[in-house]
Length: 403
Ligand code: HEM
Ligand SMILES: *[C@@H]1O[C@H](CO)[C@@H](O)[C@H](O)[C@H]1NC(C)=O
Ligand SMILES: *[C@@H]1O[C@H](CO)[C@@H](O)[C@H](O)[C@H]1NC(C)=O
Image (cartoon, rainbow, N blue to C red; front, side):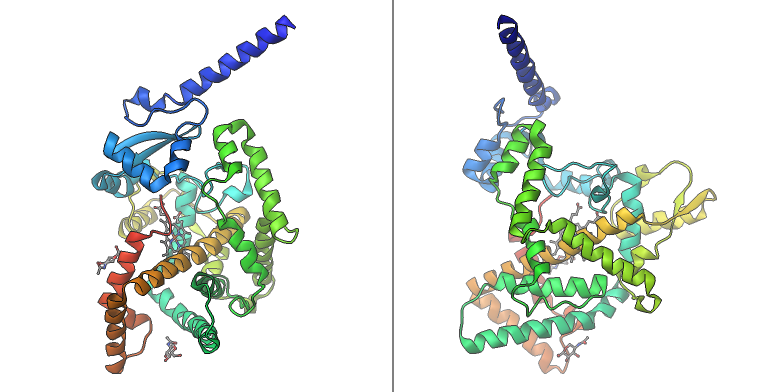
């Protein structure tokens, strides 16, 4: 019995010592910040005040650069715009790797789900990224305009029907259907009935990835007791499965993506000029020698410059995207393509309804464009400077994604 108690004491002391070490990272580096708790880090204060207010208070108290602990996870909070510019642009080569989408997941080189453009590190990220970039050129966007236009027409039908009935409705849901419709058509070349089908299983499964309660108890446990992280992830997946009529949403969506890929491969006439095809046909020239990520800089022109330089080097090999990279990146594009844009549109609509004078100005700008005999289409979007301002301000006030 005594031996057991002694062992238990040693275990507790070791455990606390580990936590103490974990929560002293910033102190050792001389970075200021709120005093962490050995069990919770600073997460209780974050929960209590909400992240935005809490960050504001900390910045006032500790300055523009500070460190805090999200559970046991050290977080360096940087609010100096010049420093941020350096991190994102000048010194980007030292900050290539991104945090996982969920705070409790980690990049795992052996896990196929980790192989997306969002999670891949270093050179592998760069390879995949350079395959996806051509999707967003002006020429490709112009090609997509017709598709997007017809999706918007569909949304207008839905709005018209609602207006006639005079019923109240949630605009966010309407926008989510619109952007889901657009991304499935433009990136994967498939038609869905997501705008008109109230019970769309595609939308139900996709939405589940964004039901993230900031104070989710499962996330809290995983952050505070990293030992239970995997267990918590399994539990999350299980709950999502229950909410998705017994199907794991991730498996279901990736399953759909696999089917579309299969169709393209076995069916040469199905070949399209879209993002999926770019990934399937990918072949990138990469250096056979060591990676040179250290030379990377952010911003398209820089990347292109680097690409051109690379083509001149002699020692190179061709690499295709792996199956895991294609599937995982397709999944990310599906999520990223629909959630962000619908969130931005919903906030913009909310703000316009709150600021009627701004709405009126915007209305006049668009009206004048049409009165000048121009159409509302890709080319004319650039001729609406007020619309640009409205969108920029809405994105500034309510950014759909934070880094
Ligand atoms: C208003 C709309 C959008 C916002 C606010 C937004 C925001 C962001 C942010 C903040 C990042 C991270 C950038 C970084 O770490 O430096 C990102 C990355 C990404 N976004 Fe978006 N996004 C939007 C629309 C879209 C759309 C429509 C797509 C797909 C068609 C998309 C696909 C991606 C992808 C694939 C990445 C990862 C890029 C990489 O790792 O190289 N996003 N987005
Ligand atoms: C978009 O739709 C509108 C009205 O339905 C039409 O006038 C316009 O030409 C279309 N634009 C494109 C690029 O298809
Ligand atoms: C809106 O933001 C974009 C991207 O940062 C920028 O290029 C553009 O000049 C901004 N427009 C206005 C009107 O500020």
